[in-house]
Length: 351
Ligand code: HEC
Ligand code: HEC
Ligand code: HEC
Ligand code: HEC
Ligand code: HEC
Ligand code: HEC
Ligand code: HEC
Image (cartoon, rainbow, N blue to C red; front, side, top):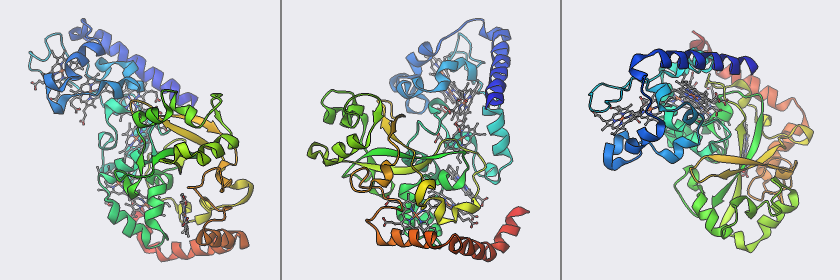
């Protein structure tokens, strides 16, 4: 981690040095000046507009437009020169190298998944929005059919999990709770996140976190969760949980242990108990509030719309839980069998 940051600082210093030494950049048009034109579709047209609100909250905003479009002169746009664009690898060396080595690198470039003017880390993007990044190329119905070959309720799983929870690795996974409108359809699976404006209206002018964190101590207790879920005032909202990674490796492959149902459906102390309330900001990014441990297992009141094993609502799920609990043997056998069945595929891929 430390080396990553140090590397970045070195790369940045190199970049800044380069920027200062480039004669065309003796002048400095700050991001605000760029946005005077590029923040307004009336001036630059729909295709060249950058949404200032979305850009301002990103780490890239601190770098400023110039760090990436270094060739722009004071005469832009009248000079007719095409502005330069920094490559992501100039500053994101480790991620770029990891991704370049992946099988996925030939399928998509950084900008196919990331808007450089809207670059956010995994905890600031909702699981739904992450899936939209993937579904731009991997059609949802195709994915449901493909995964349904081995995954029961594939549709539900794909609605309730970011693709990258299974197709990327992270040192840690947590449960992120999102506020969903009871009606809607914009999101896959018919789920629609409530917008900041909608939540503000329901909160009646209070900060939206106080819909749940009633005592405003920046911590959601089990008691507060229960109060939220039982309060008829909130009947148009519900909490939906997703298992999200705290970091993202850019290898995007199919991870062997994600065949293993117990990776998620586990009981007991190893079960995923760390959760956060993920709250939408006015610009559509997310911030988090820590939730008391065990909320997800408090099936009745904690998170009535999110059951992992240990809950009592679903016989199917409890059955899976029982199978896993009945012996560590069953899944490994299933897993082994699947490996054998897909052996041919795998050999092919390894080439
Ligand atoms: C006076 C308004 C104005 C300002 C200020 C301005 N731009 Fe532009 N920019 C334009 C227009 C108009 C175009 C389209 C030019 C064309 O098509 O020939 C453009 C084109 C661009 C493009 C190329 C888009 C493409 O793909 O064709 C980039 C990148 C860009 N501007 C970045 C910036 C940055 C960064 C700044 C600040 C340093 C900036 N602009 C300041 C008006 C402006
Ligand atoms: C982190 C680097 C980075 C920063 C900071 C950045 N840009 Fe860009 N910009 C890019 C890249 C890369 C592209 C090309 C995107 C692509 O190919 O899809 C781009 C494309 C553009 C375009 C062409 C239209 C588009 O969306 O593809 C415009 C206009 C533009 N940038 C303006 C700006 C302005 C104005 C700012 C500051 C508010 C800014 N950029 C800040 C990297 C950056
Ligand atoms: C001029 C240097 C520079 C360039 C070029 C650049 N970035 Fe960044 N980027 C940064 C810095 C600095 C940060 C904040 C530190 C961090 O979190 O990595 C950042 C943060 C990010 C984040 C958010 C990470 C987080 O956890 O908050 C993403 C995503 C990202 N960049 C993607 C890209 C992509 C995609 C490109 C190419 C289109 C790109 N960057 C180009 C410097 C750059
Ligand atoms: C720009 C298009 C594009 C985007 C966006 C995209 N992919 Fe892909 N992906 C492809 C193509 C093309 C293939 C190869 C054909 C196939 O398997 O569908 C592929 C293959 C894959 C594979 C199989 C890789 C292998 O080695 O067997 C996985 C897993 C995958 N993508 C996951 C993802 C995930 C997760 C996301 C979102 C974070 C994503 N993809 C976003 C285009 C894309
Ligand atoms: C519950 C975990 C899980 C989720 C969620 C999930 N996948 Fe998968 N996915 C897998 C596993 C396991 C495989 C099988 C890999 C194999 O065949 O070896 C797979 C296979 C694939 C393949 C085909 C890979 C190949 O080798 O041909 C693609 C493409 C893919 N997934 C993309 C996605 C996308 C896009 C999403 C989100 C919409 C997604 N997956 C969600 C676990 C998951
Ligand atoms: C197939 C889609 C895909 C591609 C291609 C991709 N990313 Fe990402 N990346 C993601 C997703 C999904 C996240 C989670 C946050 C988000 O959704 O923006 C992420 C997160 C990141 C982060 C934050 C990582 C962390 O753990 O905090 C950085 C930095 C980043 N990407 C840079 C890049 C760069 C640089 C490239 C090109 C070399 C790239 N990404 C290519 C999908 C992609
Ligand atoms: C990456 C995590 C993950 C993996 C791996 C996984 N699941 Fe799930 N599963 C979930 C989530 C999340 C839900 C949705 C829980 C909810 O909200 O009700 C779910 C729901 C289910 C349900 C439906 C429960 C209901 O409420 O109707 C069944 C059945 C199920 N999973 C079985 C399996 C089986 C069998 C496997 C292995 C082949 C598996 N799951 C692998 C995360 C996972």
